[in-house]
Picture 1 (cartoon, helix red, strand yellow):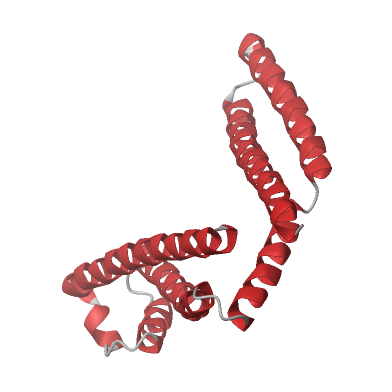
Picture 2 (cartoon, one colour):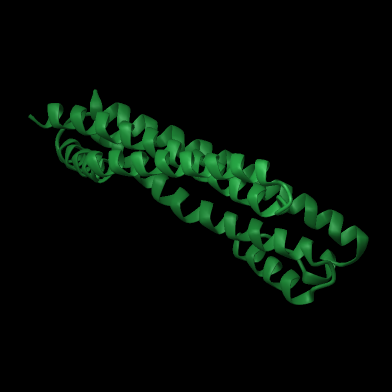
Amino acid sequence: MIDEDLRTAQRRARRWNELDEQREAIAGQVRETRQALDAIAAWDPESMAVEEAKLKAFDRALASLQRELAEVGPARDLYEELLLRRERRLTESADPRGAELLELGRLLAELNVELPARERAREAGRTALSRPGDRKAMAVFVRHLQALGMTIEADTLFGARGLREGRTLVDDLESHCRNLENLRTRLHTRREELLLA
């Protein structure tokens, strides 16, 4: 019974994800259209009418997606709950998948700590680089780097050479964050494969 429930919940969760992606895309188009409307001068009524018509169409599409999302309901939560139940059963049994699931869980828990810390450091670095000479912003960036185990002094990130080094650090953090996100996606996929096998 749980296998059929899992398959049904998986289909509903995938549908929810598709609808949510569509909603995000349309919301982005709404923002762009509103910006275009703001940029159009009152002396161009024809362009304003076109942009307002687009906005109304996007609003209708968003309302339709919201209704569909409500029909699908808390599909992702239900799917995750069913996966957790299945995982508990497998890890408590002699099934060989249980050991791999425990290791995946450990790796995911580590990623859920490391990735946000690196993202915070990256954002602090971006902020510091956008305000050259701001010692407070640079000190925050340095504290985040030190929290990641990097040995760096605040004074080394000042001046032209320091800005170059700061950009390199932010680029490295960006690359590392992408790699960790990809790893997390692969681990989640493998977990799902094991649970649905």
